[in-house]
Image (cartoon, rainbow, N blue to C red; front, side):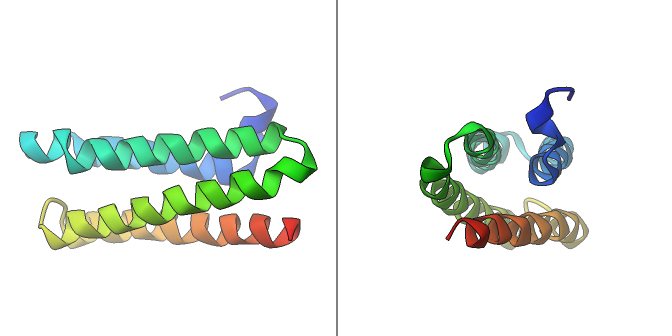
Length: 116
């Protein structure tokens, strides 16, 4: 990561979340890896793309992009909880993901409030 936008703390955090999720998803059963695992991966990537887009956008476009990123991130949180409830990941891995997710959620909320 060497682009100026990747220095943004929330983008660094999402990058780290992706790396952690990627490591855990390698342990998923095959059917779960290609369904719920792939969905979670996609939502992390889409959120990351939206935040990168937000960081480059004009001020009047930022709020709409952040709201969209927030919606994608909320969906990701639901899917990750589902991974735990279906016993695809254990509680320890879930808590590790959850710790990062909560921090990213706070940062996302803060960014959104700063634009309102």
